[in-house]
Image (cartoon, rainbow, N blue to C red; front, side):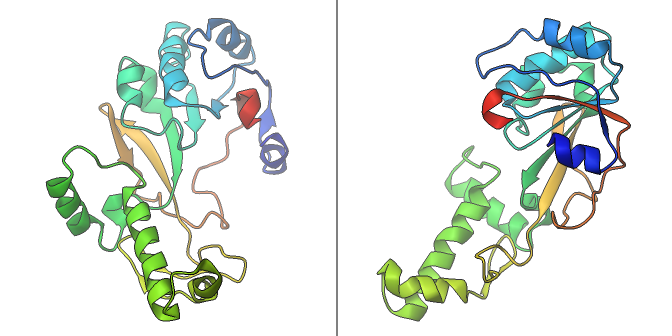
Length: 219
């Protein structure tokens, strides 16, 4: 992370470490505060990001942006932060498009919620499509043997709920997406410009200073 950030012209002013059991970040945040960062990147879970946001506000760091990945990008983050004002400055990313942006997302979610009330998770439609992509490959190969249907899987051209699915020779999606979320009035909300190709340019303006605070397992 640090190397790529610096290549993009971001000045990294501090590096701190914690663990997935921690809830008190006052010492870490106090050290970071003295560096006057524009933003903090935290590569951890919502269970830690929530208290961190609350403590950032307590330390007068409510205007410092908090960036993170899908591990903290949950509906529960608002509750875990105590709906701290600093939550409004949190931006997080998840792999894939939001269900609202998917070509069949809205109708599919209505059917899913009707059958499995309260069970929807952010990757539910991807698990659904993944299952049907496998089934499609098995049908085309006329076999349930992985050795037989894997070559057919690589030639997939499947219209799914999430997108039109196909793979590169390396097995990656040909049209991957990343969604950025913010929290408006305590509700996780996708940015209008959020869906983007992760191999393309950034959709966020560069920050002058970034202070990563990453657990050792994610460093």
